[in-house]
Length: 276
Image (cartoon, helix red, strand yellow):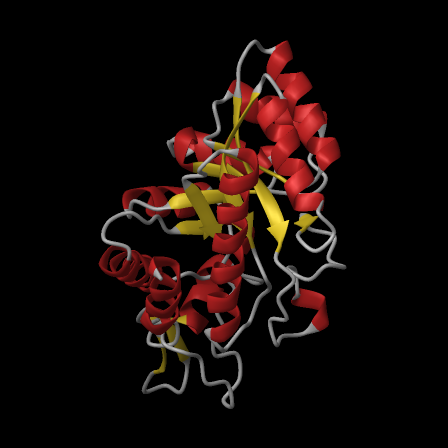
């Protein structure tokens, strides 16, 4: 990734971002001020997309996590680069729609979505609702029935992976508040329930094991665990799920000592595990 290439120091000794002197920016716009370098953002979008297209033979999709930073311009950039968009609130859905982002490429996450937010997603034909628990699953079925439609969903699974990261940013272990657990049988119960609900269309599974992960191994292991579970679903429930959403969390260089794995390495190793 090209995260730091846009940050330089000019002949005045001032920090520049994308060639713009930050002192001049502060004088013009005041502070505090958020400054984004569009070229760096687009370069990173393309680095992800090119790696996915290469290693998944055109069958993958990069999804930008709106929780990182969402505004209309960011949504326009992500759309122009051909990515999907994770949203976690009605506000993020609204912002993306106002920017012209296609609803079918949105993925609605969250472990405490309100009825109003779920209805807003249903009314605007958001592509996938990532269901976090059985209560939400049943409530979404009720709301979709109320609107005389079928909700396309993915179920968020906790694969039980130790991501070698800080406890506060681990999201895939059994005691995480996000998703349904494999070890307890909760994930299989959710899958079976989803297949029996009239206003739910189960399209696939999602997992996310944490953030700031510098090693590809946890991602590879998560992919294998999820594929094993999908095979188990096929054998026990009789459905072959077609979509697997593997959450990111790739480590980046926050401090001088950080040594991130190259992006393409993560993606190549995970794709190899999936193909196996």
